[in-house]
Image (cartoon, rainbow, N blue to C red; front, top):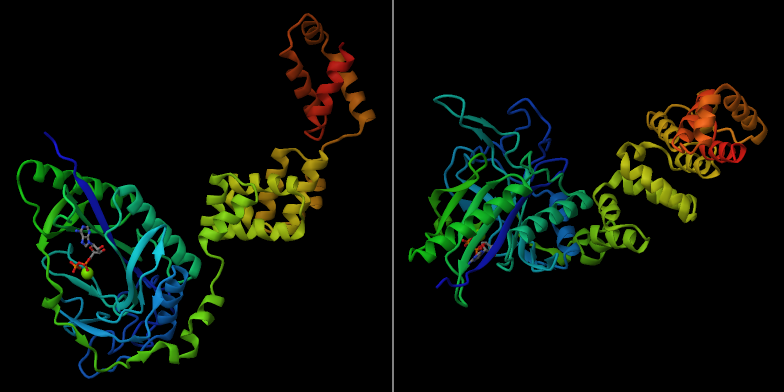
Length: 461
Ligand code: ADP
Ligand code: MG
């Protein structure tokens, strides 16, 4: 008889903050720096005797994140030394937070959060070079926030959606670029399964560098652990890695307990009472928040957009700015909906000014511009060339609606194509399309196809 195993998942997510300088020194924080060991100083190289200082901007970013998820900001906070040896952290400890994180609690997507704290990133090591390893300290000391969730997630899809929503929030706050492929956001998933009321032994999976990997690794672990238990075996508490090509997790090491790190408050850094520091005041931070993704999503839905469209705008700041700017110019729902179609199908349209989008849409609505020609003009405008009316005239893109002119063209085509005309009259309706095509050709694409169609039907009755 097979028992029912419930999976439980808790996430630990790290994100590099995009501050101007590093966490504990004034060295440039530049994720794009290609030349190794360029942005370094005695502090981030971990030289003995160097003194760290706090980066206010980084603290502010984490507190803003805390406020936006409804977390409780610490009153008292401090930084701790997490002691361990590895070449990427030569001072022998990482500065992190232990007992007094900046934020506790809060929730995102209905998932309860445990804490959000701030620490420093380590140097980047490269091991696959030969019989030696390389270290690049450009990344050492970059502010790294860690967000920990409660063990309240029960399926892989929710876990990956949660990570995606956090990424969206971080980019909205301007706190991190949170690109998983670049390692700017890293997800670790803790997974256990159990058939009782108590939690099973958890396994921590690292090296998940895409949302798909998060989902697949969790599904793999749920299956692996369930099969172990069903076979009468135990799940070992360990840290496992994710093998992207084989799509399996593999054992890395038995997990340390936190007491192995001998955490203690860093004596070089100030302890803080946040409420005494004006720019860390909760209300000030709240007033400084941008429109948060879930509010934006709801605003577009209320606006009458489909879920897909509202998701596109919520995820793409450029396009949402474009449609918002246009909405400031006009309240014409038809025009906005039409413009939205162009924005959704071509992201580049976001580079066109609201005024120009407005004029192009007006021409389409009047019937003087075909959809294809509107796209052509928008492409030109995207590259900041000219203005809508000018391009339309210069390129001869305006549709002719002048009935007398069009009628002459239609009569000419009828006279020139007796066989087609009689075929059409005999019931081959498909030939109408050919005649309209001739009309478009004669007018060099400027004839309004709808009017041409009506004229042919009328004259050939
Ligand atoms: P550790 O001391 O091993 O780091 P924590 O209590 O700090 O463990 O939790 C780390 C992460 O593991 C959190 O995201 C938490 O939600 C998750 N977690 C804790 N227990 C379990 C469990 N039994 N199953 C799944 N996840 C768990
Ligand atoms: Mg932990």
